[in-house]
Every structure is written in C-alpha cells, then in structure tokens.
Image (cartoon, rainbow, N blue to C red):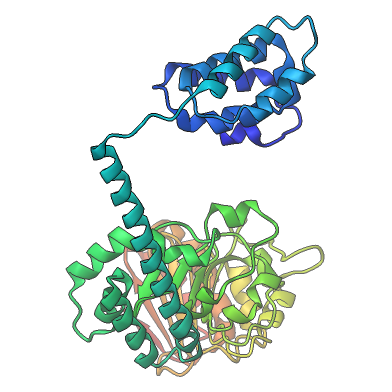
Length: 418
C-alpha cells in the first residue's frame, strides 16, 4: 500500500485499483485506514470509479480514520459525481465512530503493553549510552580487546546478546555452538550498522565485530553509495562482487581494509592509492584474456604499473587469468614488489609465485585438455624468474604432451616434477 503513495510517472491508476481489490478480499484491518485516507489526496481518486473503490475499501477496513482529507476531497468533487453519496456516507461513519469502552481485562492488557514499551525504551536508552561511551574507544584501539570486553560486560549486564557474543569470540576456546546460535538469531541486527551495501548473511565476525563483508545487489544497482559509518572501521576484507566506487573506498572509516576480493580487472586502474590494501584479487574477463583494458586507452601494462603504486600491496591474485596478462604482470614493476602471486584458470591450471622460496614458482595442470594453454602459461611465467620451477600434473598425460611441457620448461635452471 505504501508503494501506491510514491508518485511515479506513467503509473496507471488500474494498478491502484488492483491493490484495492486485493484489500477487499483480505481480512478487515483498521490499520489500512490511514493509508487509504492518504490515497484520497491523489487527484485520480476524484473519478467516480476510483472513488467508489476507495469508499468500499474504507467501509471494509472500518474506522477509526481521519475524515478531514475525505471532507477536502468531497469539496473538490463536481456536482455530477456519481460517487459523492458514497463518500458522504463514509465521512459520516468516520465522524460518528466512538471508541469502545474497554473492560477491566482489556485495560489491564493495555497497561501491560504500556509498561513493556516504557521498559523497552529505558533498556534501549541504557544500551545506546553504553555503545556511545565505548564504541569510539573500540574503533580507536582495534588491536586491543580491553575496550570491547569492558563494553561487552556492560551490555551483557543489560541483557544485550551482543555482549555475550563479543566475550565468546574473544575467548581462546569459544563455545562454537553458542556462537553459531547467537549469530543465527541476531546476525541481521549486527549487520544493520553497515547499511544497505552489504549482502545479508554474508558478513564474517571476529572478536564480536564485522571483519569481512560482501557487497550485495544494492551496491551494483546504485551509482552513489551512502557514506560508510564508523561501524566499517573493523572491516578488513571486502568482497566487491563487481561493484566499485573509488571515492567511497577512500573514506577514513575504510582505511583498515587489507584485502579486496573479486574486483573486476577493468576497475583496477581506478583503484586509488589506498594505504592498507595488501592483498588484491582481480577477476579477468573475456575468455583467454588476450584483450582486456581498464578503460578507454588503458591496457594491461598501465594497470599493473598503477597497482605498483599501492604502498602495501604484496599479494596479487588473478582469477580466470591468461598467458597475456601473466606476461604483462611479470614485466611490470609490480612483479618486483610482490611477495606472492596466485593465478589460475578454473578447472584448467594454477600458478603460484613466491620469490623468496627455494623453488619460487609452482605450476599445476588441472585438466589434460588445457595442455596447450598450460605450455603458454609456463613460458609467460619465465618473466617472474627462472631460478626454479615445480610442475604438478593432476591428470596422466600422453608422451607427446609431456614432451611439450618439458620443452616449455627448458629456460628454468631447476625443474621439479611432482
């Protein structure tokens, strides 16, 4: 019903009548009265057909409802409006309605409700006071549990389940069953301070606070994102899932983010110089990855050089990667500062580069159908260094396929076959 109150160009009045027809088939509920009265203020309800449906709906749900807007509508009606009599009847019903006298049992129930609401209000005020006092200290000392445990004790004293949850997750041996039960019952409440950007039930909590989030459909559908609240201060990992807002990501409350997952490669060039991101997962697109750009005139080399400027980036993950992208990465200044690179093509091959290891490169062939592509990957990986390579094959290969792989590894000084 609230949807009907939102003006929208091109919306047909027939859709409103459909909703009113549905209401007439439902159990009479006076709570719909105020919404129906608001509908009476819309010009289309001056027409006889719409006005008749509205009057029938008001009669169906019954009073109490405010008659002043209905009287204003009555004054606007033309003298020949066939539904004027129906509206006059509804106005009279609303005017003459007298609240029923409650018996002793109903009065007692009303008092109980009023007392419960007052108690709930007092509880919310006390809980809000505890959070206002301690949350700024928690956000200012993220690596120290002292402030959050003091806050947790005060919340637990008030009966707030978040207090118990914080204490359990800070424990060296938490009761995982109880943690799961609390999270199942209150997850949506504890995710709410993060706002509409996060996907429901996808947030990971540690030490009682959100540390890893996945952006949901709202983020993908909106160009302008709401400013991140202080609740984002504890977030260390963001699963981008395709969306990206550079200005939003550079907000002070997101300076603690260390890892970004599932960022589209095409968006990576626009990633500003975030001071803390140390691990970045990029998802390539376009099949083999032979042609991919981060925007008009921006290609592989420019994107990897841009990423090299991130001061803390040391671990890069390339998903759905191809030999062309690997070759450009290996020849960039980014490769010289990375402590680890992981690249793969799902169900085809995997590559891990760790320059500090005794055997810096480890390549795995997952599917025998990808031997040709795997050969190109091994040759492209030479740019990361040829000191040592370990090759794993998860499928038995034919003799000529093994010959092709061995030829592709000839540039490496040391090769291990596993």
